[in-house]
Image 1: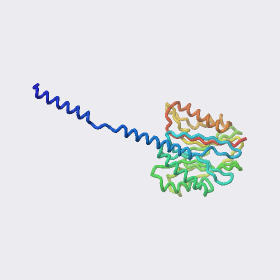
Image 2: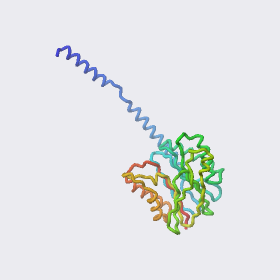
Image 3: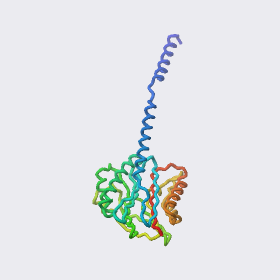
Length: 282
């Protein structure tokens, strides 16, 4: 090979090396700053969401327990206690579609509507119908909220309930040591026009006796997966209630959370977990 050809090849090689060396690199510093800012924003959103979730209610003759654990920094699950006049309290657990910030934003919107409507409506069916009427105008197609709402009358010891596509309420009967599922017919909020939504929504009332316990929860409990994709399931949840419902509510919730963590066995949590339980004191 002539010296001229060798020199030309060397020059081309040096040019390629120079091009590689001078190729623009991503601005890692800028990306890191953006990620840090996003993380800070999520932390602020988490603290705001925590403030929106009330503590366990204090109602004479009753004992309550709560647990909330989002799958990400913020979540779409929520629970609430709605004052509805003397001796009447709206108790609910809900699940807004979407994860993270998307679910949390929908959760805030639905919570605000529920609180506004509860001050004007008399029954769970009326409340859910009004919330559906308003949210239907704002929700994107395919977005929805599931809500189980029960109005607790602490004098009559009754729970009047309506269920908009949520998991059933479980009631442990102390006298017979049995768990009963209550799932009035209903569809998710935001999925159907007002008239059809109301037609599909039933309402029912259950009386609780001293020692009885109710349990409201999100599907993040019953559908919690372990490393071999085995769901926790309704049977395990009801079995836990049969053995542990006589405990104080805080201990009941703490024990259930321990059982869920044992079942999960380190598998990543894919959905928000909400637990709201109450016991009529013997």
